[in-house]
Amino acid sequence: MVEKFTEACVNKTKQSVLQTFVLAILAGMFIAFGANSSNLAVHAIDNLGVAKVVAGVIFPVGLMLIVAVAGELFTGDCMLIFGNYAGRYSAAKTIEKLVTVFLGNLVGGVLIAALVSAAGQFNMGNAAVGAYTIKVAFGKLQYSFAQCVASGILCNIIVCLAVLMASRCTDVPGKVIAVFLPICAFVIGSFEHCVANMYYIPAGMMAASNPACAAKAAELYGYTDEMLASVNVVNFLTKNLVGVTIGNIIGGMIFVALPLFYLEMKAGKK
Image 1 (cartoon, helix red, strand yellow):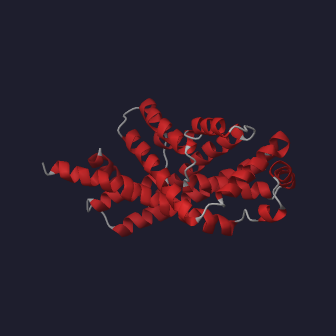
Image 2 (cartoon, rainbow, N blue to C red):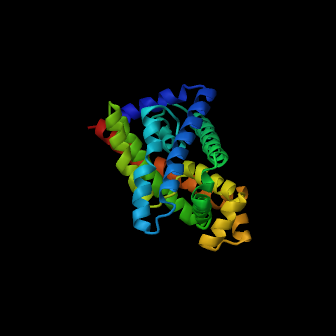
Image 3 (tube, rainbow, N blue to C red):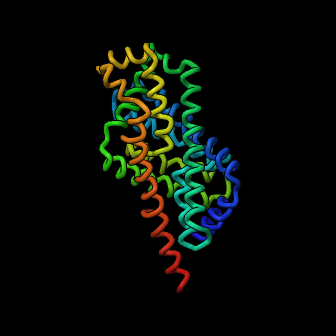
């Protein structure tokens, strides 16, 4: 598995920057579809456990689309480090690839958030969907930096294992099954995924700028104007995205790729 995935990583580094960027936009869009659908499905469910299970069942569609169709996802691409451990390409190549994918994922996530807003989805349920979208975004901005990092680590351990399992499958049904349960587990665990947050928080910002959604958030959750104003770009970057991204990198590169590569080296020496 490690040998085959390392070869796949080498092939990824041979893509042009534009190819990588387009594939990353697609992946950002696919993850956003899962995030958007799960928000809509659970917005009126009061029981936390039930809401998490419902979201967990729906959210994995994003990674399913990526492994079955196409896409470059930042969290999964953290395992490009396999090629560095094997000495197949430079650290600069990995950094270039990850930066390109990260930016493409961001474009894809924000694009779907903008389209969802333009389509009027936030006004559904007398603006309750928009209010819940704000609630999700606001909640993600309340974590400390350490919590963001820790949650990001936990998230990408599961996501990378799901990607590795899917890589061992030769048909689409196998890939779908391999992805479904691990991603369901990460959603139920409420772990932080930087690419998913590229939809969740921009969508929350857009919903907060909608007067009807802002009024509904005040009615349902007691949000003040100051609280709504805190759902902004600066807080998105400093209070969530940076910490979560660092955690996702550590989870993929250190907690998954490093021990598996070590075990592969030991097995090769026997």
